[in-house]
Length: 314
Image (cartoon, rainbow, N blue to C red; front, side, top):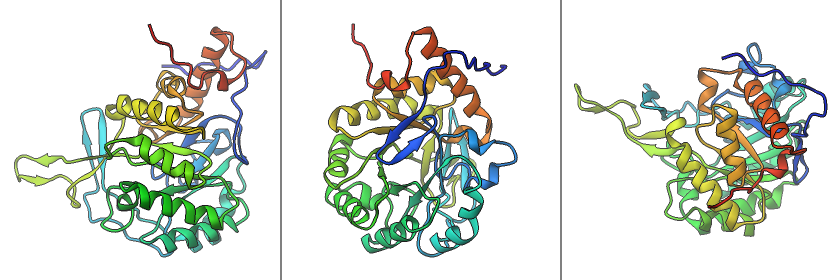
C-alpha cells in the first residue's frame, strides 16, 4: 500500500516534550529491534524519527543467549536474545559519535545485574554528549540475573529507579514488564521513585515447542513475545498505567500502522515505540507519521497531545 503524502499546509503538530526530552514526533524505534540505530541508517532516514532507543547496555559487553534466538509465532515473534551488547563504554566511544550526526533523540536502554550497575551505567550514559534520556530496562524476561527480577517486585523497581534518578539529570523512563498481576502498582512505584515517564510494555513471556523434537524452539527455552498478537494487551496496560499516574506513558506493543498507534494515544500514551515491525518494514515510521497527520486533520485537531487519553465510552 502506498504511503500517504504529508500535506504541509496547516499541518498539525506532532512535537512533544517529556521532561527535558524534546521529540519532533512521537515515534520512537524500540530497543533491541534496530540495533543501535546506525545498523538501519541505510534503509531508514534516522532524522525522521522522534527518537531511537538503543539496545540494552550493561557495563561490560555481553554475548547474549545461545542460538536459536528467534522463532516466529502466529501474529508475533518470540525472542531470547539475552541482551547481547557492546557495553556502555564501547557504545559511548564508538557508536554515539555516529548517532550524534542525526537529528533525532538518543535514548539509552540501561541494564544491570545489580542496583549499583544500573546506577553506574546510567551515570556514564548521562555524562556522554548526545544522550537525551535513559530507558531503564527492569523488564527483560530473557536473562538469568537482573532484568525481570527488578521489574516484578515493586520494592526493587522503586530501588532501581531511585538509584538511577540520583545519578542522572536526564529524563528517566523505566520500561515495565507485562508479566505482573497489576501493572498500576509498578507504574506508581516508578513515579514515586522519580521517573519522568514510563515505557509500557516489554515483551510477554512465552514458549514455543518443536513438536517433532519436543524441544523448545529457542535455546533459552522461554522467550519474549512481541508483535501484533500482544497489541490489545499492551493497549489495556497502557490505559491502566495512564490512569494510575500523572507522568507520561510511552506505549509499546505490536504497532505497525497509524491506526495501531492511535489506539495507544487514545488509551493514554503520549508517545509510542515501534518494535517488531522494524524487521519486516523498516520504513513504517513515515507511513505512521503520515497517517497520524491525516487523522488529526480529519478530526480537526491541531496537536497530537489532544488525542492522549481521549477514549470515549458508550
